[in-house]
Length: 283
Image 1 (tube, rainbow, N blue to C red):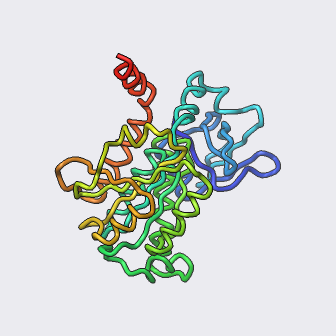
Image 2 (image 1 turned 180 degrees about the horizontal axis):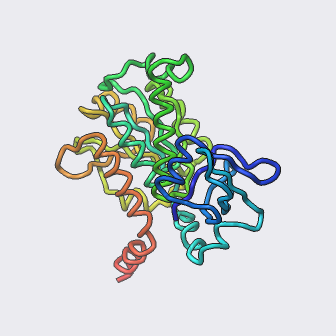
Image 3 (image 1 turned 120 degrees about the vertical axis):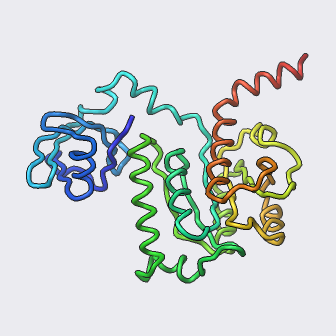
């Protein structure tokens, strides 16, 4: 189910006021009218229904009551909200590509319910470290890109109905990326890191890696040109497992989608293929 994402909680009277792009989306695109309801996610993650009270003057005014939950409106909501409940959280480590390809990668990651996107500067990344990693804080070009990516995530979640609040980290240097990887490993001892590389470094396949029941999976995808040999060696030394996705060379924005989709499908179907493996092994 599509859910509108509120940036601010309702006021003490349970009222929300939405203008600008939010008004355009709800009134002009989704065409909600007075007395109609739409499902929304509060900043806390709570699902509610908002009843439209007014759409005058370029501002939508709506009200939400504690008993007006999205689950109460739709008989399918229980199934929908639990769709990703049993999935292993997936994080994308994405080397910054050139041009606008990162916009596509961010959108697809949010639609695919990835929990976090971590852009980073690799050896073959075109953007400079200072422009991208410091830009969010000094108001430079990187800040504009970061804000655009956050907006793309919100739009993608509203379009897809993803219940996962996809997070976005400011771009990291390669050293910062591995420091964050070590932090994740301390928090999640059963974490699985997968290095998607165009060279045949893999020693086994996705099913074998994911059969270990990881509690979180991190996907590392390179920029145009892939990872350098030194970077690939560093990922492997840090505990990542190499995966080769076919014999063709994919664009980096295609590779990110391909990798996330492959892992998601294997995880979604894990019960069925684990049963078949066990039956084969016992046969």
